Length: 421
Image (cartoon, rainbow, N blue to C red; front, side):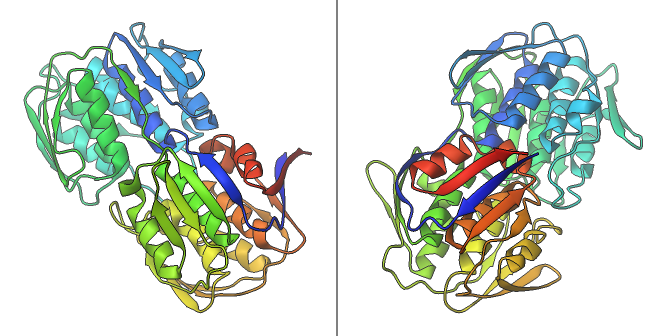
């Protein structure tokens, strides 16, 4: 088993280049199922989740080839299976995103229940509700979902999501682009990753309007063509390095970013006293020699404060003066990192979906685990300012979602090692 060893590193300084977004590239790869023609996706991060999605597409009869560094060519012309392999789908949540494209193109899909981080129930009922509204018959078993389309095929419909689920919005979009007629997704997710997927599908010949708002209109088309597309920068990785500069009282220039995508993180860091400025080269984050104070955060669907940054931000809040409150509204089980931070000397109490943090505590190195992807990043941030050595286990979570994680931190002066046991 691999682990990270992190030691107090002083203020991080330098430049970091943000990779393509994990949460964008996986639905883009799945969307390539919608066409028989080749698609090219650029700025693809080297991640375990990308490897898993590659294997899923290959197992369906497709061909995924890395034609150059960061560029994948996906050819789903040989699609011959509509059943996703259990051993692959059980490893990550995003595997369920192949269901919509399979239904749209082949009229049948069988996908085993998806795995991933244990941060909450993350039910798939909204996905299935959307498929049924489009005319699919959905059969639920204990460990898999089967959906089939009748002779009429998929037919456009008005679909209201009880919660603006990113995954459900993406899955319904990729099914509806090949349905007959018009589909409306109301209370749709508004995340940048939704817009990126819609832009890719429109390049392929789809007719999607309203992506990035709460109502998406999709005019079905008979078929899609191949297209080339560059993945948007990863806003969660951007936020992680913003917080790395803040927690270490460092000074970092973050390149390849979209400022609008990190507005809530920027606003909250400024409330704490961190200097965050947009420069010509990127985003400049400076916390050197600044008096930082507490603030409150509440996670919400985009454009609210992102749940994926909640745990790294909490690690930061343990180091600033004052009391902070963190309210988690997106996932009910996303406070598992609290026990790990408290093991390092933090003073955090939880009650339901609320965490109360007494800041300015001196953190001490300890043996902790990455309870999920973003919690693992939080443990690294805490280790950078703790005395002694912080040993972080179960780092496979972290390596699922951050490209060149160790290398990027070390380039900024972080004292971090990856070791194998």
